[in-house]
Image 1 (cartoon, rainbow, N blue to C red):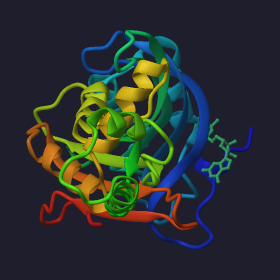
Image 2: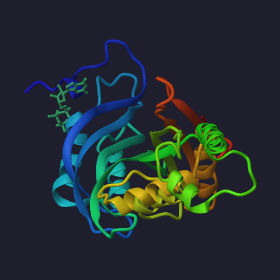
Image 3: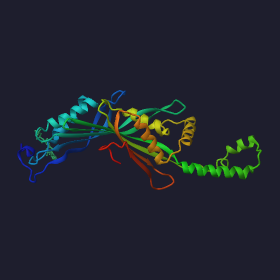
Image 4: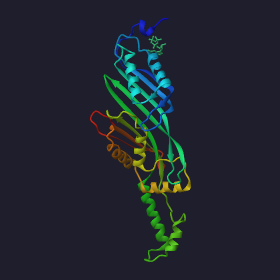
Length: 304
Ligand SMILES: Nc1nc2c(ncn2[C@@H]2O[C@H](COP(=O)(O)OP(=O)(O)OP(=O)(O)O)[C@@H](O)[C@H]2O)c(=O)[nH]1
């Protein structure tokens, strides 16, 4: 059989930064820290560099079959990812000295309701990226976490309208009938305006420190949700919805507030050598989005 990759030379010579395959669909068993291994449907990117300027190309089937082997015979964890990247390079002896692999998938978690003790599934988009460059392993974990953000400006403006409605209803006398006010507060006229809130998404990428030997998928999601306090809910009874309303009212935030909360939370975690955060508030006031982006600020690290 003719073998173009081995038997012919490049028509135009040159080294290449990355060559490989994108959007490979395969089931993978993921082993995340403190979680049972579980199958996911992954989209995979697999690359090596091409160091020989005269070589026609890399051997894509070798990368693919190494992924196949991982998919069928192993779980994706720190150790197998490292081995995979090493094997990408050793399968391209004389052609490559760097390797890159990325697994993107939805990671489903059972999440408890706020009050009623019900449970429901939430699917979090996760991306695990590994890069091997002459013995240096760079591991990154990215997650997307949806949450609700209520506008502090809108809340203040709504409060003012409520105060005005109160003054109109009860005047400005010192004494008012508490029972009447209590009943009035339970009417639409009592809460004459409500602040707008929006479904928002925190995109967070962390570089794992050299000491980290497991993917802290759930720890990272939990840290983000704990910092924001208003993650979107799965199973919701009325008591859960009421608690959600309270949490939104007590955690008013602009996109700047959300990014700073996450920045503060991730700065406490030594297992993240670096981080990149993009907070997207899909506004209900505007047709455009409010966005803030920040990083840990490491020299040579992630840039905004
Ligand atoms: N390098 C390269 N291969 C491609 C590309 N598009 C498709 N392929 C195909 O990928 C297939 C696998 O290539 P190789 O890994 O060299 O296959 P092989 O020669 O059977 O495998 P080895 O004996 O291990 O080298 C070939 O049939 C190529 O035609 C491309 O853009 N670049």
